[in-house]
Image 1 (tube, helix red, strand yellow):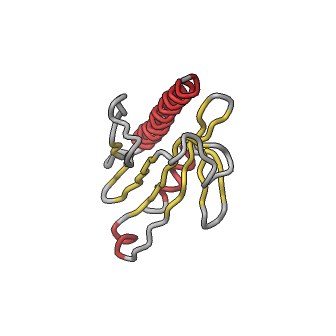
Image 2 (tube, rainbow, N blue to C red):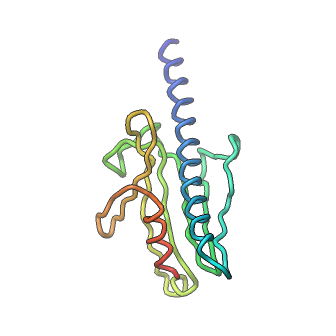
Length: 155
């Protein structure tokens, strides 16, 4: 009984961390969109969704965050790993993983969509987003500069 209660508490805590991580990533994207839009005069970046409600985040299937402008798209597909906390695809323990893709019509026509991985890693009782590019083995923190580098590829 004690073990079941402990597992239930751990599942609830990880679910809370996953929702918090998804909201933090969305907030980072929203800040990026606002910053870029403040510099633009004719076009605007659009963000969807604008917020994540408590009951809107699905652990059992992918969740999407999209930034788009004039047919160019930055798409982040969030998923919960099979285990509560995983190290299967990244060396730092993580509670949420994502695939990020940047594409436009030209890249779609050439079947050339690159994908990078994002991981919501546990660091000192908080979640920090890291990226990993399996092609180049580059890794780092997800920030506005990272998002800009992705968007620049399709502009």
